[in-house]
Length: 114
Image 1 (cartoon, rainbow, N blue to C red):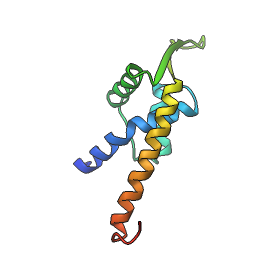
Image 2: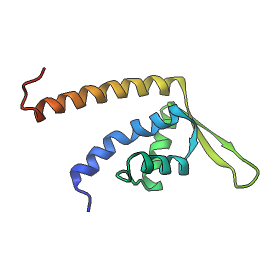
Image 3: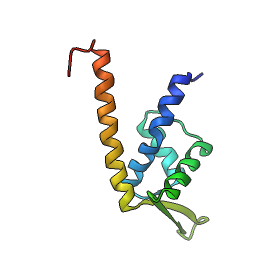
Image 4: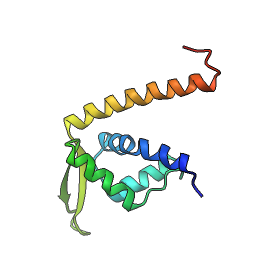
């Protein structure tokens, strides 16, 4: 069973990870679910009920946009791509994340590094 700490940590970083994947290449939801699970070594096993609210929020905030695409063999899929604002926001979030990780590391090391 996942602890409250683990759930809170994951919740705080998922938007950045989803936006980062979309900045690497456009994708639909199922691709994102698989890519997140694969890259995390299975640590991040998202459900659709977790992913889609993130996508809707990113779209509402103007950080991604979606279009319906059909490949002729299957039903059309909604494909998400980043906006220029989304790319800028990802860079900002990644900078904050690096600063946060460095701060946490100072606590792990006994506070000797600055």
